[in-house]
Length: 94
Figure 1: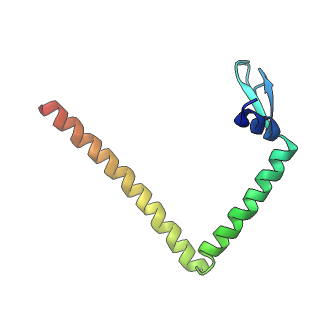
Figure 2: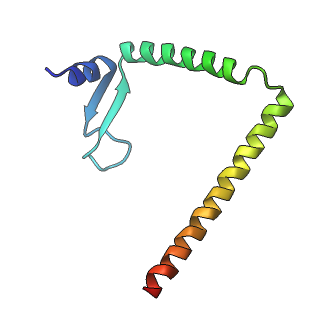
């Protein structure tokens, strides 16, 4: 058995054909107990890193950071739409 297959068997439980809808082609995956332990450990590590990374920010500065990041995402979306329009125009002119 390949290593990836063994790991998947340790971390996941599947029920083929068991989906939320009527389409029985899917597979419902659930975490096995060992998988839940791994996820919980990983979440603890992520929480520690986040605490170290953001720990020096005040509530106010963190809110400002979030607002800035949100604005950058919106601006990048608009920039990508603009670039796509320019490329379409350029392609039509060729």
